[in-house]
Length: 168
Image (cartoon, rainbow, N blue to C red):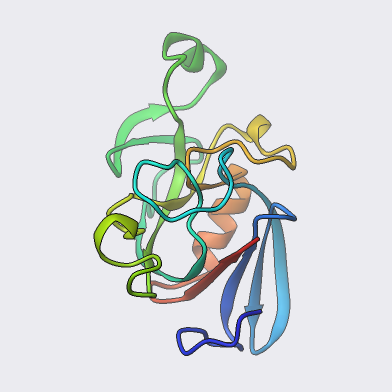
């Protein structure tokens, strides 16, 4: 892990792009790990790159409290739809954001905060997706995708402000 002024080495989320894994650390101990899918284009911070931004972030907002499992979100708002394979067939081009959203904000000015590299303005989230997309390989447009039961569990374990370290 990077020794950095932004990081709380005791309580944070560690996202490994190489391992396609998110791990919760609490009081310095590994609490839980989940499989994820990061960007198909790899790591990178530039707006429009469809890459997963690296470095230190924080959870700036938690969205979806109380929504049912597999709820569909568009523009960070629940649509009232529940994801099914039939719905997917009706909308084959949608990038599905499901169940919960943890919206990330970069903490490193010039790297993942401000200007053309700002993670929050790139709308980078940790979010649920169709479960079959979590298969150990990168496939997102920049976000960190998770299985729906896993993102619900993570959402219930973390608070706004928790630090997130994303690395290759």
